[in-house]
Length: 322
Image 1: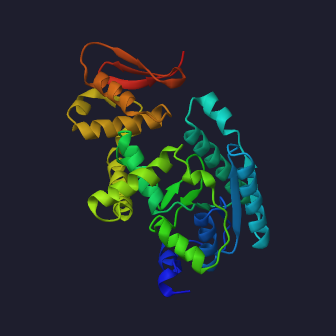
Image 2: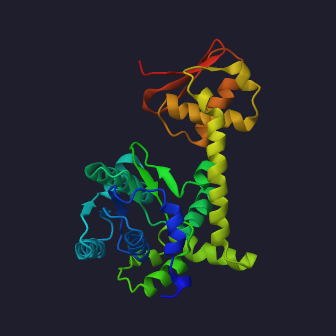
Image 3: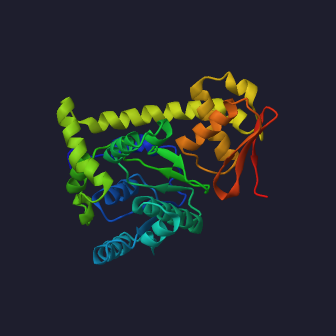
């Protein structure tokens, strides 16, 4: 194996502060990226890895084949293996989500359960630089702010669980990972839907990214991944600026009106997340902001789950269902 093909020296600094003795869950789809990640973690001396595979119930026999491959892969590597199956279409219909959103929520829930079962403080996922770039473009097209543009990070807290998600491959391109897998002679199975244009991310990967790279004259993936990294750090800093104010049960509208527009939006977004336990979209934040800025008598706006934002006597607050 050529030194230039070996990704391990670049991985080690990213995981050097992580305990090698504690259990760690590894998301393994059976594809090139996740198999390469498992191999790198083994070579980095992580001693207690648990292979986790989620069957989304979407691809029939092909997904069954992938699940069986992962089972055999774990057996070959003498590693505990957890495979679960979800009803993605049923969830999407019930919660009015897209198939991709429903799949992500089911997958996250599965990883959280697996981490709890094995008392694993972290979960390793195989997202790479291409995934980061596609995510940034996808959220940019939807009008997201920095939080959405930088949603794929090297490390992030798994929502609702005392578990950290670690993505050691986000600094690598898919091509680098494929070269590594070939040099290490790793066996993997490829999801044929990765070539389909039916999914938004695949259209970004196969149609948009190559055109963008050609238009600017260089590979856009590392540059977009770097932009996401910068945005992630700056987003964390901005969130800290409004954290104390967001803990208040009531917000005083007088100092609120004197704030810069960006701070108003940030504060209301953080405040609604804490006080109403919702993930507000831009329209909800703007409605609340305009209500807070208004001076024409009491006001009320609806939130999910029967909640309301009320403005009264110069304060805005969350009103619980009666």
